[in-house]
Length: 121
Image (cartoon, rainbow, N blue to C red):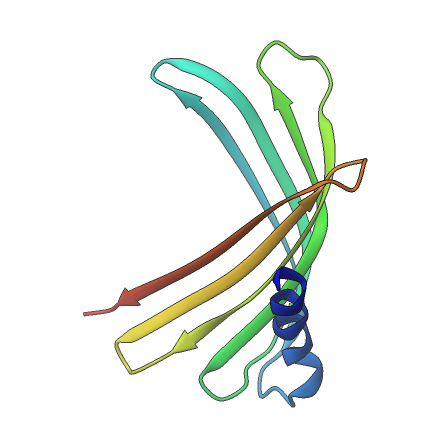
């Protein structure tokens, strides 16, 4: 089911004729810890493509990620793929859905699905 959902999201840009579309590059760095203890640093560098189809803004991104834990000297490399869409429900109400898969060297993977809603005043 997870693979089906990801494939369905990924194919949207290919089937549609977007009014506004284009490639982009994004990067992210996240430091994590608990209380006063530093745990790890995660960084990502992804290439993506987004479009616009009616009220949807579907996108797909892929690229490498690195994780370096406290006390370690080498980073762990992973491969990341993410697909999703922003959705304009009304002039003030929007939503976002996404699926993300992170693969390690053994092709084991972590997955994450997110859905969010926002209201602008």
